[in-house]
Image 1 (cartoon, rainbow, N blue to C red):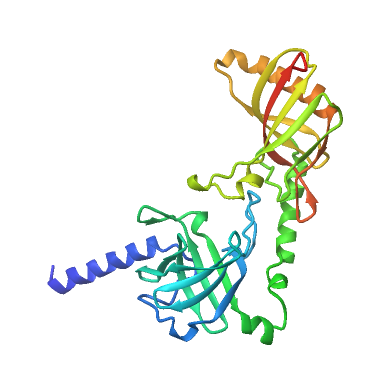
Image 2 (tube, rainbow, N blue to C red):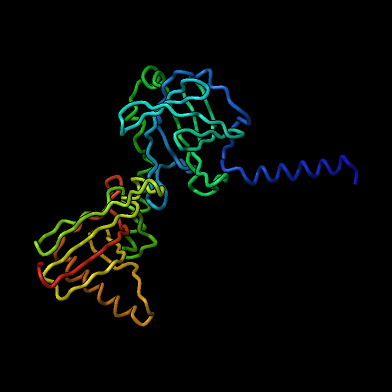
Length: 312
């Protein structure tokens, strides 16, 4: 084989590798360090955060919510608004490679920049690898303050609202989940999780927060994986169980998943947990189903339920 033939094959292999590792369905036009001089000092508001489907929600019920406000101060510094501190904070703007940048502990692929708008692809990075799953399937659209106020003549809040397409999608998911009310596979997380209201002083409920930012569990975990501690007094016996359940659109509770040490214990445990649900939870609690965009639907929850024979 000639030298030119070898070079041609090598180039083809490199092109194939490049195309296989791309995470964006609409690749960025940038392939090197980008100049941000044209937008320096302009304040941008995040107005849309969408999956590649164009929707704010996925099939799990997770919602992408636009929250960022940023401003480029110089080539190496970007300011971002901190809701906790209620002010803009400065972050180092790090160029990594190609069209990939990092600031405020987040990774982005720059897809478009102009004085009026920008589009970034938010990336999930583990080690030095960009995840190729849904965690990197997010596009963020920003509009400048001037464009919002003087061209569109609207507000950030209006632009950040969910769309008719989002509502139609949630209706479709809800109809599917409500056709199979006890099926955990068709249930999805409610943006407003299930609520329990005690109807007797025999029972108390506490919602447990799952937020653990050090381990990557953000506020979204509280509605994606809602967890409740339910304590019952004057019970038939002392007990303590942890299990999942599905609450349908009417507030009926169905037993979900639970653990047993031995296979032969599965059926007895199942009967016990179903009895606790039917005797105590369904009768001593008013159960308000989870809902998304005002639509009630089946959703999965996690429960820790304890019973005590005596009040003490």
